[in-house]
Image 1 (tube, rainbow, N blue to C red):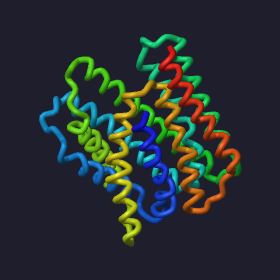
Image 2: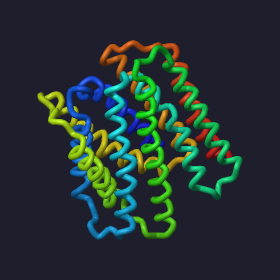
Image 3: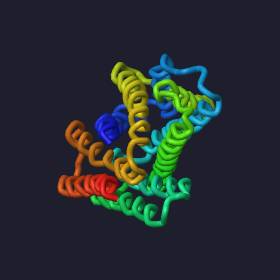
Image 4: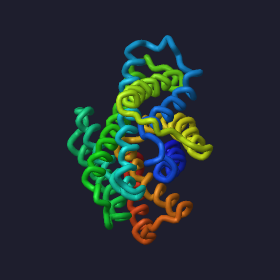
Length: 289
């Protein structure tokens, strides 16, 4: 779970960086393409070009969904919603993870399925406590756009976890650093097509915006997604679901402390503690089944 915690701290800055420096100022499709291409460059030197075709294609498909399509929805949401609203609407990701995992892993008992949903629901309740106040006029459209991103991110996490674990069982797995480049190549293909079809000539105009894109691409996406997906294979589905919502209080704290946005501190603390309780409860059950 340590890897998930590290990436959570890393990603906590991403929401505000996009909302403050990129949204409405740089074409969202160009931002997505730049970000995934930079992430691809990070892992390209490690890529094993002799990866079995099935593995390469599967990882490209997972990357296309979890990162490519997710980013297309994600960046559009910042044009419709404020940073706190985007954070708020990601509270449903744990539910999607639990439901998708239960759908794919039919071997799970009803008790395990209900447990995964219970932990996810606790995390959702904690995130909902944090911020549920006045919303913008684009509430409904923004809501559904964020849910598109949530579904892509959730399905990608579950698919990667299942695929890597099944590959390890079959004894056909390669070191993740040698194959993760395929993940970003798949995302880059989706981003490139979207930019060619829908992109606008609205590019970064200064060092700050280029620096933000460089950080988001090479560090937040490149290193971040590698560590997050690796961490996803080391925890239970319930813990993975709950950890997705730890991003919400972390992102709101960064938004408050650095960019001086309004936040309800009592609700932030109460919701954050409930999310932490969900993760702790899941870990306790793993050690005491």
